[in-house]
Length: 57
Image (cartoon, rainbow, N blue to C red; front, side):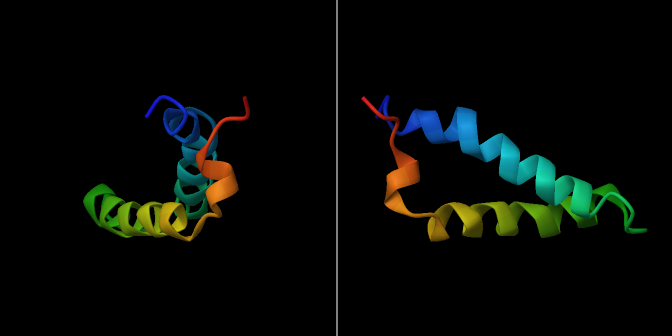
């Protein structure tokens, strides 16, 4: 389980920040943006290769 937590600390912020910046200029309420970004970030985790799911070592 500790090896899987590397994904949360390394790759997850990159995905979330990228998706958040993508929707920064969209004129929607914050909850609507959250409702869009949340499934997209979850889907990106499901679609990521398993090599990125574990820390080296």
